[in-house]
Image (cartoon, rainbow, N blue to C red; front, side, top):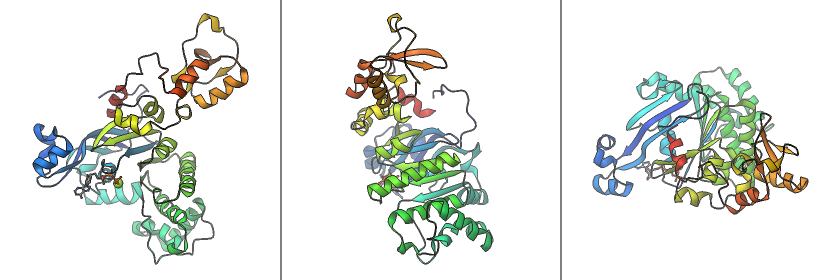
Length: 367
Ligand SMILES: Nc1ncnc2c1ncn2[C@@H]1O[C@H](COP(=O)(O)OP(=O)(O)OP(=O)(O)O)[C@@H](O)[C@H]1O
Ligand SMILES: [Mg+2]
């Protein structure tokens, strides 16, 4: 397990170590059995009739981040996220929320975790058809035992928060798909959870509405800084929303990193396939694209911050007509010229610090 480069962060919201979920007969024997645990997904099913939906997975979700879980259909995304609140019981491993052992929680503690500390938004909205919008939004508060007056007030506030002013008295059938998902979102927000869990919430929506909803999530995250775990199999959604992305295949972590790390440094061919069509200049920053400064570059001229996206640097270089210095904390840490920018666009790794080594980011998975 490797450490982060940053200084020690606060206790993670979720800390997951060597987590397994195996479905099938005598599932519990699989994680502890070296031979069985080492089998490929297909071999395991053939030998034991079991499916290892989550295999020996370790990661932390940090407070305030949008943590995206990605992977092809059947890779174990929903199972993994449902294990976090024990909607699916893990087969083996360590699972903590705010440092507390989730697997050791009794019924009451677990109910509190599901009703108060987390809230889930589903792909199929999961609204109650006979209730009004406001009553759907207030549903979680009703379960919590809040008084009618209080929960209606809170429900109305949340309906407005997600942009559904004036629609509170409608029934779900009287809303568009996008509006229904806003109700799902408002319902999750109403309980003021520490973590919002999204399982492909927007995949049933058409692309324009989907984009609206992504903007909504970004806005809510910016305003509230709430921790979010977001499942998707859509790469552009993952790149747009994720602070970090965990990529799964056959129940295992293939890579965990920032969008930039994943696009610039795919761990293997599976990830490379995923990111093949990504416009790299819109994800990669000049910190990764720059070359070392040389004497001939001088100390004058325009500056860029290291986090500037290459697409913006292209404009800046075009405008100024000269190389630009990348300046961090008043110190020149590198130079951006046409060649650096072209390397990014052409898909040639501009790193010269050894980070171009594919597979390196795999280690990050355990952080
Ligand atoms: N209750 C179950 N019993 C047996 N196998 C299951 C069960 N639930 C899930 N699986 C299997 O576990 C694997 C992972 O399923 P999961 O639903 O987590 O995938 P996913 O990544 O969410 O896929 P999708 O993108 O289609 O939603 C799949 O092979 C699935 O068939
Ligand atoms: Mg799923």
